[in-house]
Image 1 (tube, rainbow, N blue to C red):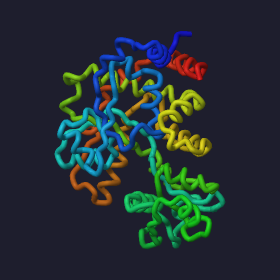
Image 2 (cartoon, helix red, strand yellow):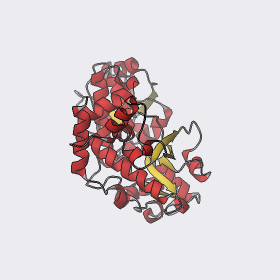
Image 3 (tube, rainbow, N blue to C red):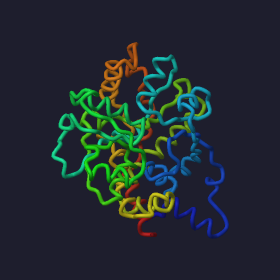
Length: 343
């Protein structure tokens, strides 16, 4: 079995040299909400297995801080930006020409968590109760979810709880709140307190895309075309590799993101949740799903977030998907196994 690129780099480094292709990498500037993090395991896996280097790429993660992510694309500060659907749709309505070229996460990164023992099967069963939100940014998700369940905002009391894991867990256990609205990290935080919980987010909201890779429309097919194609091919291949073998992926992310692995059991829960987000609905990694996006557009229109008509054809672009998915899955599996054998 051939050595992985990562193994070649390691061996060469030990000898005081490195492969020529590792010395002449071109940076691709990518805006993401997190650094090299378990939730973004494809980046970590791709770097561990050498897939980005093989394409002549060094991924430069850009921290957007408190500035709108769309501003970085508009100003040409990044090649690619991870945007949520509402950001893309609102930008289109305002006249910015951005295209989503790759759906990174094929499911909602937030949830509505209740105790496993709670008989509630949907949000409709929580009418008349107090629902906690981790922060104000979670209020919009709750209101949207209530609408899907046919429950009015007036039918519940909303309490802002903050991020403290013991407080979140205690609020559920003592029934101060019937549910907590938060992100995957909040799910893991609650679980860290030995609390078993389940998610009652309406199913139709659970498949909404998140952190989608978007580009300026005028940059697609431009002078950096080969580099961008290489990035998406490496990303898709890395996502497949990261889904193939939990043990190998866990080893890679533990090394790159030790902060989230102080407790290995919780780290594994976090990683498995992240894998569910990155797993495509079908065989196509990054597939841009027009029907799902149309549902998001319709919902934003219904609640008055947008006033004009937005077409999915104007914001979704499958230009890179064929190239991204052009890799030998059996070969990737062999490379993951080679990495695992070297552990």
